[in-house]
Length: 290
Image (cartoon, rainbow, N blue to C red; front, top):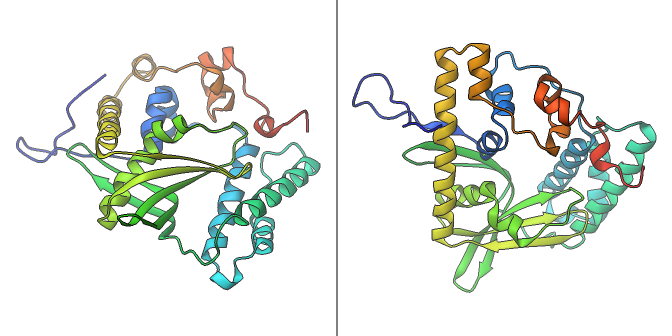
């Protein structure tokens, strides 16, 4: 489904930009049905219970953001552990015992990670929102950390994204990430400084996976984003025009896959539920039954 961006009012008026985040674009690409439930249906259908892996990820992100916001003299390994304790979210875990075990693991991983950092280095941004406009879209998003590092040709911007999942990361993850590419372009425009390097920091292992973009590779990602945005904008316009239930289901088909088990709306999706019933809220953090 493709269409030209919607125009504002009378002929000759500027085209309406598709306002989005990278997450919105990827949601459309991953599953149009979930996209409709998330961004279009009002009121949105009720979600399932909270996920333990989301609580874990949010807690680690909050602790690391808090650590960088401390005065440099206070950025100790122990301070990172205390911050994790203070911001810990237990939603989604099976019971208090599992939540306590994972809090201890999260505390240890955050402390190991910050032990590799120089407390005197000041990031340019923490949880920094950046955005940009093109002829077709207005995209914005929040970067976990934006560094300004010395390079052979002067200081360079580096986009840093924290990951807390169990899966090992590869260079492909950094190279293929649409979100990281858009963040790099938006950061470059925001600070009027070229931004080509993106990094995924796997907090549990301390591994860093990086990719050095070129201007051409960033433009390819932008073209992909604009193509996805055109499809989503056409679907949005069709939805606003008024669709019957059958037409809406046809315009926003589900993409059934194993990830349906972790979809907030799988209970509202007969196709996904029939093949992949919802996982337990703590399933993604369960290791050897713990």
